[in-house]
Length: 261
Image 1 (cartoon, rainbow, N blue to C red):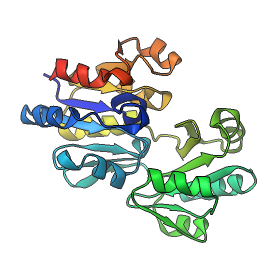
Image 2: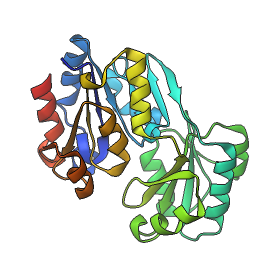
Image 3: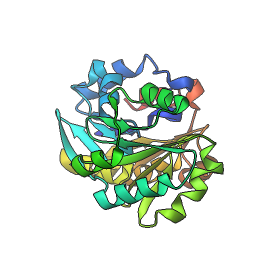
Image 4: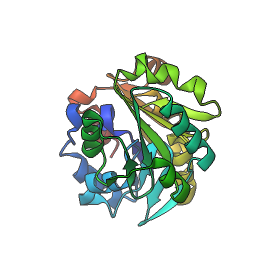
């Protein structure tokens, strides 16, 4: 039997519009009872994921911030924060680029400074623990920043995803949604986080399965022995992984979990 199952959320486990399938919590309970560990693996912050999985939070691991940290057994067991110098130069680059609005994601809180109404709505909707501050540079000097999330006023594939990478060589710039992209240390990804969790619980690659729908899931899918992508996944990722399940609109992950567990 598998020992560890990891799943991306938006576009993968969650139904459209971020709806959690009601079947997931009984399945996690059953998997845990058999000695397995389930972990959501998401770009979302740790406090948000604890809240989202509150009914089973004491039974699961959590890979948050696109692999920037791993929480298990009530504590952070792995963290790969972004260097302060990289945070500061990212903020400098963003100050020279119109239409891009940063959030500094720290382990327990997300910080933002802009009053742009659409951006503010996106932050409040996405982060269960967030705080508006006058100066993000001051936050960067005193807090551990796991990653910088950037809201794009325009579709990110037409704007931020094009203009930002050449300005930020040496860090990881990854599109994480229609209007979001993430900047983190070059070695931070869901695959590295999953590997750290596997080592912590003593899980071999062949005893681990993972589900994902976009390129920020690629390393995680490569790290496990049983990778799956939903039919609605990013086409290049589907071509690379090959193991395709039903789309999230048809509860593809849930049906595969029922088969596995």
